[in-house]
Amino acid sequence: MTNTDDGMHDCARGERCAARKTIAGDGGERIIVPAQTYRVFCDGDRDRVRVCVAELPNRYTELRTRIGDRRIVDGPRVSGGGRSAPVPINLGVDALLRQIEEITLSWDERVRVLARLADLTAPSHAHAVTAACGMLTAHVDVLLGLDADDMTRTMDLTRREYLPDDATGWVFPAGGWILYYAALGAAEAGREVLNLHHRSLAMLGYAPQHHDLIVACWECGERSLRRHDGTAGLADHVECLRCREQYLGSRLRSLMVEEEQAQLRKAGRERRRTDPGRVVLAGSRDGTGGRA
Image (cartoon, rainbow, N blue to C red):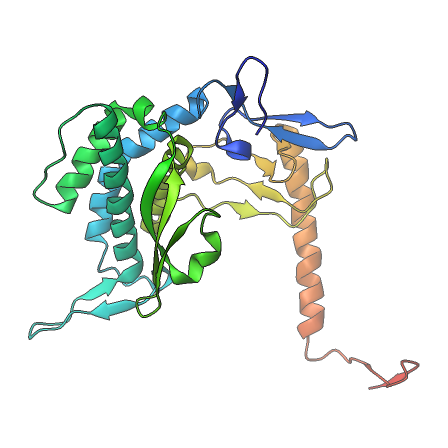
């Protein structure tokens, strides 16, 4: 993190900052610089957190209606017992619902203490999530001003490499999960809200389907170009995920012509490799000849 003499520092979103800039380094390389701010997040990302936490109750409600969806990509399902017909439960959706409850209610508790608000009471998890997100939306600056303090979180055992360095807790091998403590504050609060919102959209099928190109970026030479999905409300453009160079207008059209030609060459190579009528020479052991 970069700090300045006047107390400003990098936005906590780092290279994903909404107001990031790209500058040229001493060697000509492109460097992504987050916005400088006196707060944890820049104004753009602060507003984004507020919008996302306000939308979470609607996403939570819709996820509850999708818990029986037969979507293979969302993970395994189990069937309920009893005499009635078994009801498929999508464990991927169920796990995300539990995380939304766990994370929003834990931040709700901390903000209510600091803002001297009454404890949350609700007849159900759904009502609790709605009330918590409403309060967090109204007090987003309190949320994004919290100091780091120990909080509990759960994690799937298969993702243990993502545990924070300072985390301590317990592993439950039979259940395949971890309960841990970590020092979490304003930066983690904002990132968790944004992550929950993004995962909810992806689970519901609302996340934009971006397309990665196979040609290299004209600026940095890396194969890191992505054409963003216009259905997400974005202008049609290609962006390099490495150097953040953007291609619009005539540059975009020229780039897509190059991409089309590269795709045709790739398809031709694949056809030649799989053509059953083509004679392939098998090299001899000493590499000096071959036979049909």
